[in-house]
Image (cartoon, rainbow, N blue to C red; front, side, top):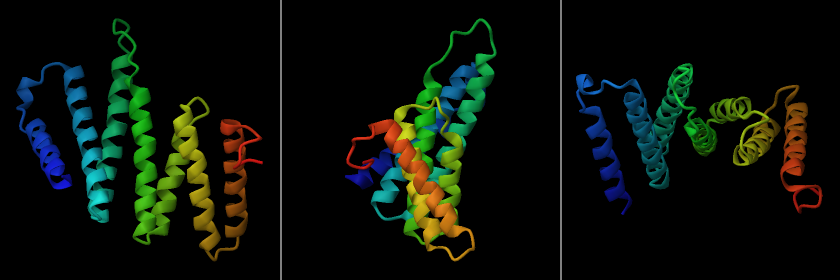
Length: 186
């Protein structure tokens, strides 16, 4: 079943790639098409991860992150048009971005690339802002725990302090999200 889904996603991606550029006259349509391809890449990454093809999954997630960044930048440019209605799609794209960064970190941990995982998690931490959705806040709290685990395993002079700092951040975030009486915060 996964092989069939993977073939369908690959075929859909090829369909988008084969559209002649001269057919795409509307910049907003072009942006939406590229966003669709990005979502396809993220689905391909998920399937490759489930099939155990971790390096290829990481590559697809990284393509997805790049596509989501490009989408957010292009959408921001479109929003500068005073005659255009505001778009709410950025929030969804941002959630996908946070999830993809988390998956990159997890997969890099699985292949033993702790430095790459730490970089992915630190990028996730930077991306989640105070006004980000609660799902993104939860991913940020999880990333703090992953960072703490990675630092705990390192042998550098400040690794212990870094680990504790990340655990404190995670506890503060979990308390803010779930309250002080939750099983993970009390």
